[in-house]
Image 1 (cartoon, one colour):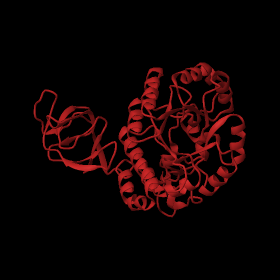
Image 2 (cartoon, rainbow, N blue to C red):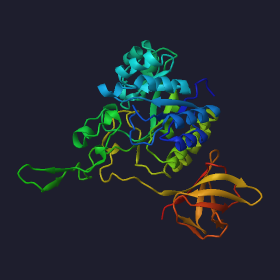
Image 3 (cartoon, rainbow, N blue to C red):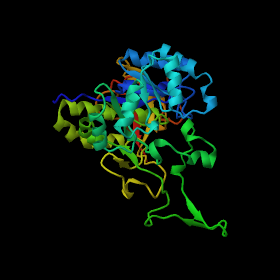
Image 4 (tube, rainbow, N blue to C red):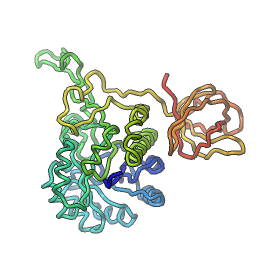
Length: 413
């Protein structure tokens, strides 16, 4: 193996449960939002108590926690901001992400020792910008999604060695420049740059002539459909070598609004791919079909490599639908370890399943495996044939030594 440094795997955590899943399934670091100043206002996010618990949980397992404060602030947003930064520093947060120079000045005044990462929202598209932020104390810059691998390499060659580059490698692509969008605010009054985006880029659009109200003409692009802003999802699983060669320090997964199952599946698959590549290049190549099959078992759109290999073309958009591809259902989370004496694990139901179903186990480590549901009981010890009730607690018979936070799934019918 060469002396190239293994990149950090950075995962989204929209709440405490997702943070724990991300860490247990292999993330080196997670990024979270507090109850203010984050660009995912509709995520559950973290209050002071859960943030402290999450930081302690991650640190106990060798993972880092970065707190996002990457809104573009209005005057009223500065009320209490300094005390907020001081509090997350005292909790032990490893870094904070900002994009607004005003927010940056407050951070430096109240928590000068808190590591600074510059969010992709700051439109980091060149090495001069990176040099500017480095002089102001930034440890890391998050590249804009518009950058190619060639441009990232050039940035790496022209910034200080101890400055890190973080880039998105998986998840939703925003139609607007580095996520800077006014469309949501204009159409719905929800400010995308303050965390409340209504995602109008996923809507279906028609054209209406001024004097013919109610007569809708579809907007078509070569008769493929009308979802003109709807990008495919980014996926760079089969390009780990190119990402490493470009000198990227942190590979970031998008998805603080996603489910625990999504987070666990995507994080675990990228963890395997990165580790396999650094263990054996050829083994990694041979496993690419497996990695791709795994990430296709969560809700997703078709995949694209975004801007990494050049400007995206018409094949990088989805014109016919704004819905997700969903081939598997998340049916259960293990809440108590497998008991060797009884041969049972305790599971919380997340979607209906029943005796006779062939299901898959997604463990925190190692490959997924199949099993058949043969017997299960409710909390009173009564045998049941199906689990139709949301969050129903069940004892599940299995020969597989399931661990707490392992997940169960089955193919959709």
